[in-house]
Length: 111
Image (cartoon, rainbow, N blue to C red; front, side):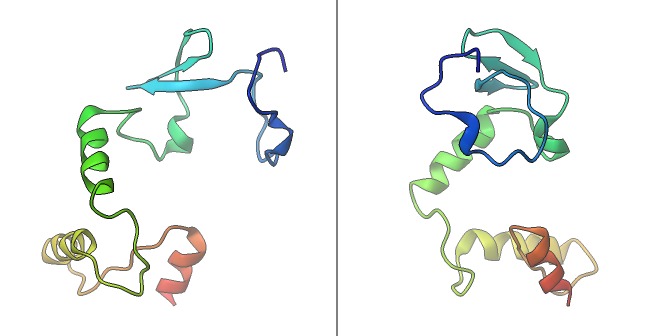
């Protein structure tokens, strides 16, 4: 690698070709490397980051929630999940929702 890094990239599984750039922060639609050069992020987390990098409202919501409860097991109820489930079912044709963290869990829920 051309950049000085605290850790080598050899431990990362090569799931996709990666440029020899190490990003250290993001803001809106931009990523910044170790030399503070700005890059327009056309990929945005493989199209799942529609809110951009580090929007203030999301950062604040994450900080507020993380100071209370981060992620209890799905075997337990928690207020944010119950509130979101109610919002989704009351504004859709569905009676229940299933929150998963992967495609495999989504398929399990569908079955």
